[in-house]
Length: 208
Image (cartoon, rainbow, N blue to C red; front, side, top):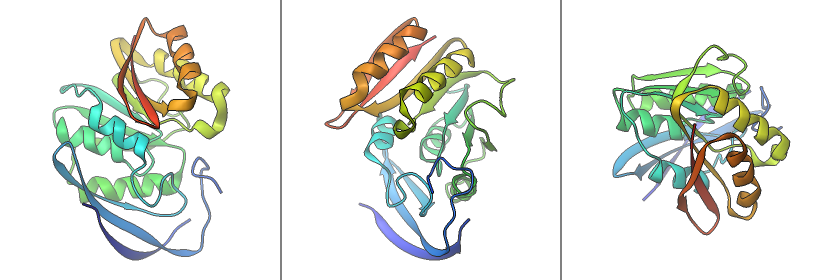
């Protein structure tokens, strides 16, 4: 069950812009259960899936493989669902959450505090531009489909380059476009499997 409350917040147009611009609008706060654990999130206009957790992110959150004692990246974190779930369930891991959207990052920081996770670092980055010197054991991502396959191939290639040996990339993609996405994953990664599937999305796990 999801409980909704509303709060006033002036927020400073696409969710993948650096500064989505809106006037004084109401943000939404909701509580939901993922993998048997209760989470609370604040969200609002100007971020992806502002009214609730989108079905793709939820499918990935419920099915992603969790590795503790890992360095993890939530790439394009939005308001922080995937990274916060991972951090809460794997407290010995360090989870980095990055996005280009400054509003999303501010909400992500709020949600980190709301969910009392201490093993998270939130940073601004356009893909890997501001974390180019880092590598990860796990990358999780719900990529921006609307930016097209050329952008998403760049995302896949750069993810491969920033994974440690034997690192894993866990990513969700709309079912109707998943075959093409799978082809590109296989172009870079040594092995790819379907981790989960719904009526609208597929979750892939790709091994470096």
